[in-house]
Length: 119
Image (tube, rainbow, N blue to C red; front, side, top):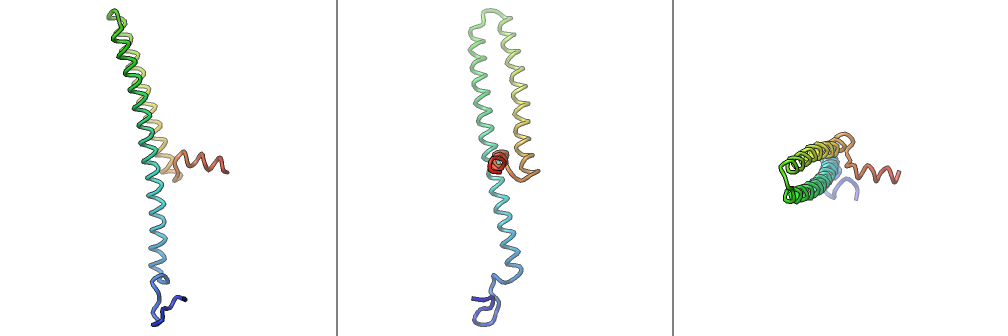
């Protein structure tokens, strides 16, 4: 069928506003899909981080329980604090990189890596 319906009125699809709306919806759908991917990557990264921190905490607790003197306790707590600060700092960097990579180029690091491999 052409752009004119049988009663000589234009079809909705042929109207300029309809074409613009379809293009906008497609763009918004792509945007949403990309940010949903970022959300999933964010969750995955936070889960890995939490797992690493919990393992380190348990290890530290076991060390503290086996400590025989105050110096050993002080040393274990100091080492734990140093690792925690480093871990949180590194994690903040990873999360910032994840968000920045999407806002700058519109793709998650995983998508960028896949593109480079196919490329």
